[in-house]
Length: 312
Image 1 (tube, rainbow, N blue to C red):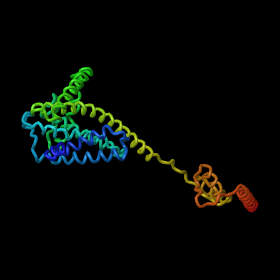
Image 2 (image 1 turned 30 degrees about the vertical axis):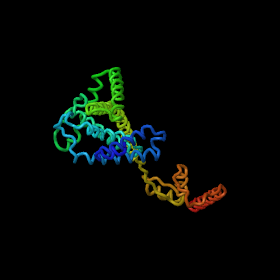
Image 3 (image 1 turned 45 degrees about the horizontal axis):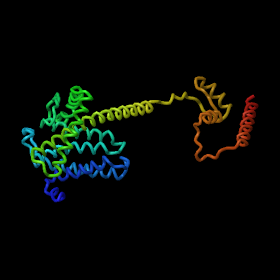
């Protein structure tokens, strides 16, 4: 019977109901948040809620010119679509897209709070945007958030908010049993959804605070990485002083006499210097043994002595 009644619901409500069920399953899941099972549920729930959001406008269930009393009791639940979208969006686990997901979730939450404000579900003061241009229209709700939360925080102490939260939960629990049993009249159903909407306002105000803190941390981390990358890319090797590379000591004397302003260096000395600082590649070159180094050094000394005698 419950399944038959659900089929009689408008499409947005059916999608919303299924999306909420998935959100509840994700909330109580024992698997890690990043597990394939949980993330598949998150994606499925988001897909259903996105479709619900797309199908709502043509039905014209809500109008900013209407009062809350003019909205059908069962339609009030549709106001929760962006709240559930935000709740599932923030549960996506992808480090490379985390900042985007947080910003998307925040927009969904602000959308929900804005709708609740328009219908006076709770007492909030939304700050008007500085510009009323079309391109700033979507930013209005985001700009409203600081004063929205500030007002909620300043108006009540933690003790008062906790007390009111407990009272709301208690009233919601009492009305819920009557609504789910089908024994509640229209007025009772309306009261239930109003309490439910108010409960999600409290949840979202706390969620936005956490989101803003995480966004700040992620942006600071990214800025630090960019600065580190920029600094390392701008570090240049010190300029190499020009010198003349010769084959032996005789050429060192010859070139050194002709170009007194330039340093001279034999190939052997050049190799020794670069080997000392580990700047010579080893790939493809057979490593010489100590015996070979000794013989090469003796040959070099013998050659230099011959050239020295010849020049004398």
